[in-house]
Length: 230
Length: 230
DNA sequence: CGCGCTATTGATGGTCGTCAACCGCTGTGG
DNA sequence: CCACAGCGGTTGACGACCATCAATAGCGCG
Image 1 (tube, chains in turn purple, yellow, cyan, red):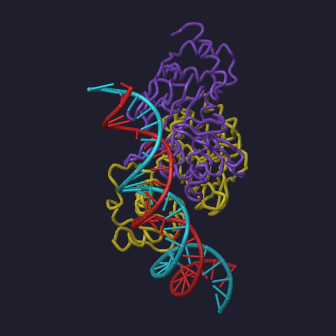
Image 2: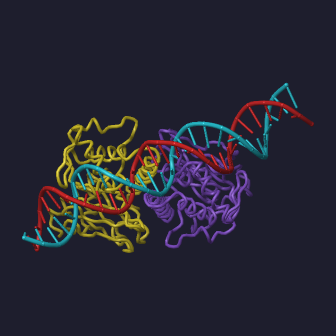
Image 3: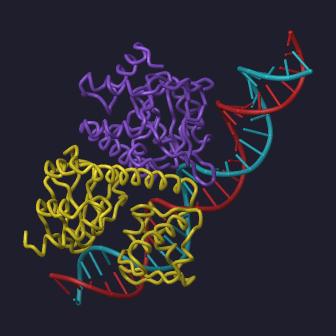
């Protein structure tokens, strides 16, 4: 759990993360010493609505989907956290539960830092606080931008934006199925499938079960539109 | 500008605010001494997209609307800031411009604290940082909840939610016109008008030019649904 | 008094959510 | 090793909801 190799791996991820980037190496190593790593298998639940928050959590390896459900069971995915991304920026400061659910979409390793230790560390390193606030600002902007998209974009355009964002983040081969794409584009599975059917006919993407391949990324780009933050 | 009466007024607002609540009085007074108050008339613009942020800003009196525009000119209002609410929680920490526009909807007085002074103060009073992060968390949750509402609620339900939230925040007499309500409910002016026409026929609200009166607040409540944060 | 903005209501059509049926994998259990 | 269940993918038909356009009326301000 606390083997030197483990610590080094954790430090390596921290140093590339949006939150801890730029801290001096000693501080990052102190932090890594405080971290406990945990393993999750595909589809394991990392936290649920109602769970209080007792630890800051960052993905070391793999991918975690953070989403929120409506009363009628529709699901909105608002964060896909890969290595170096945190799945709970607010929780450690308040300890309170939120309405989100976090699930591993792959075999995943996380680093968890007990909330009080994390808070103490953050206040000793103000840049960490600033990074957190900046990231939360991006989350707010991204959510508002999705609302505007729903007002004046059709499903096809929203979906292209999602695919383009995923392409920039993960490259041309995307391991997502239609349900997951729909939850990112705020639409239904059927509509997502229909639109992707068109994109396939046009030779812009290809796909097989659970996998989408972007063939012509340039066809997805809408100039004037910023990427999403997910 | 820095008359004792002014300072006292500012302290009084700070002490009721979500961000500075609970700080000891000396600290609040120190902060108020740093603040510069400014007046805005109805429809004045407080900041615009592209404006860098150089001061933390809190409303002392009046009301400021913070919204964001889409490429096609649609506008989404995501914050109505009254006394004790801040209109830029992220900006002071990054200094960077964002895509929001802030306008006074009434004659309004704000307190502005130069960004570096504010940051220094916040780091000396960690509770302020925690309050800011908690508030940003509410903003993210509220935005996501609006997205879910657009997926599985009809315009009538969204609008009732908006009216109910405004009622709780401002009481039964609301000085908003149909355009402003539409921008809060993510719909068009016509639809907002139509729905409010129905509510009037049912005796739930009354309205005249630029003013809505809630007659039966209980008819707006949807159990199971939390209030919005706007 | 006339211009402009808000309110109001009607008519129309498009988008897309919903329901339903079907196909082809894939993995499991007999 | 095969059969079957179950899930993801695919396509079609239908219709509700609501954005859009349009036309008009009322109020306020210079």
